[in-house]
Image (cartoon, rainbow, N blue to C red; front, side):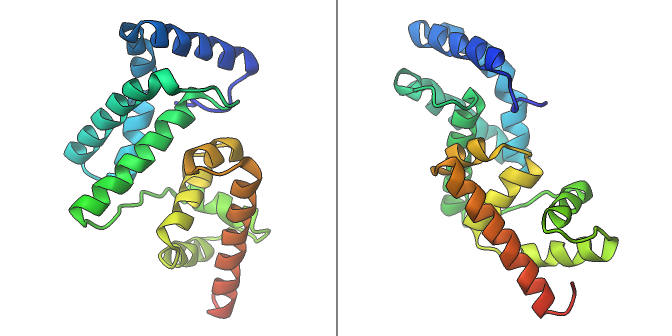
Length: 189
């Protein structure tokens, strides 16, 4: 499912598919087939419900198809465009339904975050970090999810969240620093 971290050749080939779909919307099917599963997994990890994820993904691809004539290549994979729409649709879903947001984490993702803070990974630190993530504002959690749980590049994170790559990187490291300080203050780190 590694749809990111593409070579320039991959990006050029993908751009050709996008341009073909712009000229003939029936050719959008290639992009749909390529990205349906990664977008579904992305949405499901946030919604935690099959029916909701199906609806959100359907809206995502419909909006992507409708916005395709205005799509401009910005140096990141087409998937960043889709994930940005999907993220907006997920946020809209939670605003409309007033349901609590679901976050699906894996232990290896927590280990990567701990290592990124310069600390030694341990089961205790993972447990404490898991609790500390609950303190984050939703927009901060989005950055953490995209970078560590979705393993997106900072360029993609920035594009999905509507900021430049540098801002995405700076904000992510500030969030990590804030988490680390919070954990130190609580005596758990």
